[in-house]
Picture (spheres, rainbow, N blue to C red):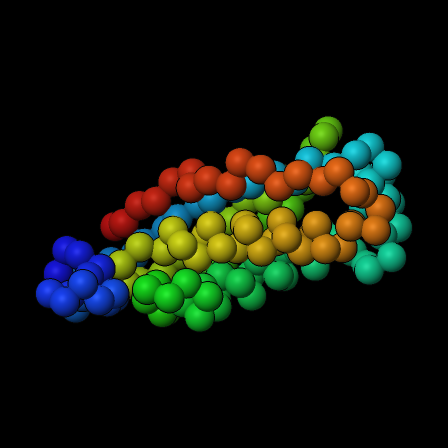
Length: 146
C-alpha cells in the first residue's frame, strides 16, 4: 500500500509487513533562542525547576519512546538506542537526537519528536525567566538504513 488512504478515502497506517527488517538510524536537530540572562541561569544551574539540559534530554528520550502514541499513523517501533544531547550555544540551546531501531520502517519521526519535546521542555522550564524564547529550525539531519 503506497497511500495512507484506503479505497474509501479513510486514513490507514502504511502496510510495511513485506519490507525487510533493517537497522535504521535517524538524526534530528533543533534550537531554542534564549536571552543572555537565561543562558547564564541554565549554565549556572539556577533555573528554579532544576537542571534544564538533563531534564530536557530525559524528556526527549521519553518522547522518542512514545512517538507512535502521539502521531496517529506512526508505527510503534522496537527502538534499540536513543541519544539526546542538549548543549548551550552563544544564543541558546541546541538539541540533537539520534535514534536507532531494527525495523521495517524509518525512525525519523522518533528523532524529530525527541528534539521537539526536549525543546518544549526547555521552554517550559525557562518560561518564567524568558518571555522572548523562540523554538526554531527543527529538522531531520540524516536517515539511513543498513
